[in-house]
Structure formats: structure tokens, C-alpha cells
Image (cartoon, rainbow over all chains, first blue to last red; front, side):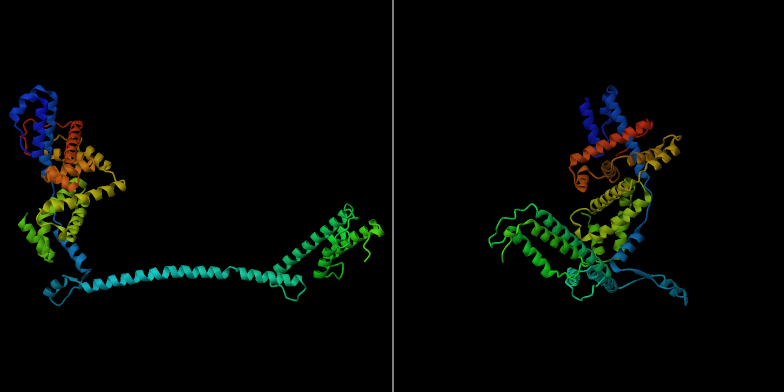
Length: 258
Length: 190
């Protein structure tokens, strides 16, 4: 017997749980240290398994398993109150009373109803919260109304400003607008020195007039200026100064005749 | 096919409580032994046994009466033990502490047959779960490699390799612990 045959016999003995032919193996394992080592391992494991299989403790879970199964299939178990009339009644009262399956079905329906309510109430609440937030936030319509009110005030109408903050804001915007217009007029008056005044436009007027007159007339018509205390005062002064300057600079022959 | 098992299971399906008691009494030792050896913890094993029987009752209609009942319920038990071991590993619950306690308690004792079984339990707890389940099914439940391969849904060759590796690792554990086979011991039938 060689090592391969020894291992085959040993493996077969392990798998079939049959005792190996020890007489045939003993000669080989006395000659081969590796096979002797395998034999010792096999022997040691056989002894360990034999003692290991004997050491399983006893257990009795029958009642708990069956009661749990009955509880699962038939419903919750209620304990009856102890009776005191007689010993037999006292013993009988300790028995478990199993609820009818109908009660379990009813409990399931109740749970389903609660879940259905949750399904409807949670999104409904979120939707209501969303609408509340939308209602608190000023809408674009509200903003346009406020701006229309501010515009009416600028045009001299008698509509009261809805908010004092908005009124002050409109005043700032208005003064800023007139400061900007004044600056523009000053710039035009300064630029009058540089423009060629002898150029004639299509309607017979110099190009300078054709450029300035519509601007001045437009401003005068839309923003009538009564006194110099108004924000339009500086603009008017700047514009008049520019015109006077031009009248002095431009020769009389070059002025329009009409 | 075990005709008696089929009759008892038929009664169980009809709601006979006595038949349920009978079925549990008949197989609880095998299931408990498997769970205890695989899990290595008595309370966990008892919980798993209850879970196994409840699942068995739930799926009793799926049992094929033409096949033996014991491998079927042991398959459920092995799967539940696998699940319990995975849950235990996720909870990082190691048994090293209990191992150290065991080692210090038994370090000065000489090995006899009882200690050899405890040493095997100790070594099994350190095995990979696949090797452990395979070893317990083969040596304790005395199932064949073909049955184990069907239960664990893996090839027979894989089962043989797992068994071989399990034996090797257990033998190495015994060698490290200085345990040698008794010369006068009569070779048991395993």
C-alpha cells in the first residue's frame, strides 16, 4: 500500500463512517510519518466527535412552540380572572381563552383604516402648509399694485402710499431721477460747444435743435415744472443755461427764422 | 418516506394540537442539537428552535410527503442558523471573550473524554460558518454529503472540501492545544 491508497482508504472511511481496515493500514503508517500523522488526526477527531455527540443537553420547548403557533394562528390570548367560588372554577379560570378569529380580522381592518388615514392626512397637511406659505408671501399681483400706486404718486395723483417705507423709497427714486436728468442737461450744455452749429437738418433747423427740442418738450409735457424747489428745478436751470449759451455762441444768421 | 410523519403532519394541517405536540417532541432534539452546535449558545439555540418550528408550521403545506421530513426541517434549521450567524457578525458580537474565559478555566486541566468534546465545541466556534454547518450536519446529524449538498444548495465536491478543511482546522486546533489521541482508546464508529 502506498500513500495514495492509504489516503483513499482513510477518506472513504471518513465519508462512509465505516471502520477502516486497520490491519492493512498499520503496515504503511509505520513506514510513512505523513500517513501516521493523518492517522493520528483521524483518530483524535473520532474520539472528540464521540464525546462531543454525547454532550447535547436535553430541551423541551414543545409547549412554548405550540402555544406560540396557536397564538399566531388564532389571535391574542387573554387570561380570565380567577374565580373564587370553587376549586374547579378556579382551575378552569386559569385556562387560556382564545379570542375568535373574527376579532383578529377586526383588528387588521382597524390597522388598515389607520394606515389609510395616515396616507390621506399626511399629504393633505403638507398641501395645507404649502398654501399657507403661498398666502403669506406677497404675490406678483400685489407687487404690481404697489408699484402702480407709487407711479400714480409720481404723476401727481392723490392716491395715498400704502406704506411709509414705500413712500420714502419713491421719494428717493424721484430725487435720484431728477439728479440724473440734471446731470444729463449739464452734459448737453457742455457738449454744445463741441457740436457743429452750422449743420442743417432735414426740416431746415440745425441738427442741434432737432436733437434738443423733442427732448425738452417731452420732459416739459410729462413733468410740468412750477418752481425751482421741485426736483425738476435744477434740470430746468441747466437746460435754460445750455440754451442761453447756445444763443450767445451761435450767430444770429444761423438761427432758424421761423 | 416516513408514513408516520405523513400522518402526523396531515393531522397538523387539520389543526390537531396533539399532533403538533407530537411533531415537536419528535424533532426538537435534532433541531436543538444542530442549532446549539452551530450557534454555540443555548439561549440563541432555543430561540432559533422556536423560530424553526414556527416556520415549519407555516410552510407545512409545502412539504413533499414523498421525501423524508427530517432533512426538510433540518434545512430550515440550518438556514435559520446561517441567518442568526450573519446577524451576530453584523452586531460584531465576537466570542473571543468567552473563549478566553474558557481557556483560562481549562488551562490547568488534563484532557479526558468530556474535555475533548468541549475542546471540539471551542474549535468549532472558531470555524467558518460554512465549515461549521457542514461539519455539524455530517457528524452530528449523520447526513450524507449528497444530502448536505442538497440542503445547502451547493455541489457535493464543495461539501467534501468543506468537510476536509474543517477536519484539518480542528486537528490543528487540537495540536496547538497539545491534545493527542489516547493510545488505548478503541476506535469509535464515526
